[in-house]
Length: 223
Image 1 (cartoon, rainbow, N blue to C red):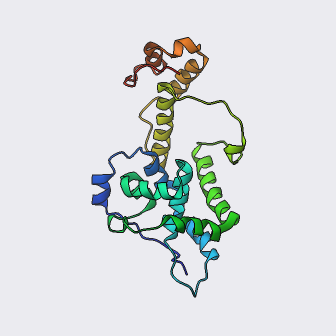
Image 2 (image 1 turned 60 degrees about the vertical axis):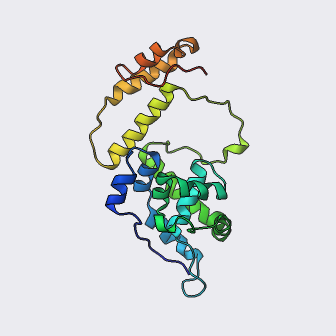
Image 3 (image 1 turned 180 degrees about the vertical axis):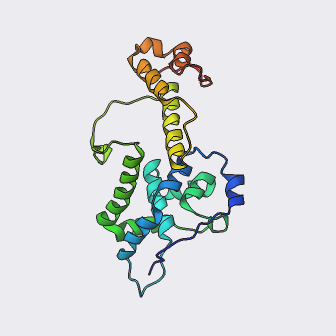
């Protein structure tokens, strides 16, 4: 058997004191992922009348998503949830359940029960969410990247800043807030940076000028 719904594990007071960065990736994703819609579809993989009550689908689905986002092994993702407030919040695991909320073997059994069909349900819902949010394009292909060869893309200050603006855009759209930055200006500066020669990108001056008056605090990059 399995529960077909879930309750929020955290009070407003806990969130206000423990979750201080509302632009954190996990905070944003937690708010926009259709948890109940996913749960409704996954309950069909369980017997509705017999058997021992299974682990919370809300928690198990979040652990699977989190292990793909980082990526982490089953044991590592559980260990990090116990140590990281944002992961704990994303997975909806309260303090009093942290020590024993799930074992790593349970994740393996959960994947086996869902099979490729159940995993596809989770991936489809998350994929659609990211597509609607504009993070990925509609014609993007979902594929295991381990089978593809690709050049390594080294992060730099400007790339990290540009990604941060992307997360802020998702946050603003989710809570219907007007952007507090000039998006067209950001895109223009990003294109300017992309056209710059490699040597020019490595100087702190170019990084600062790429985003106008945006404060530079990360130092120069050396790819």
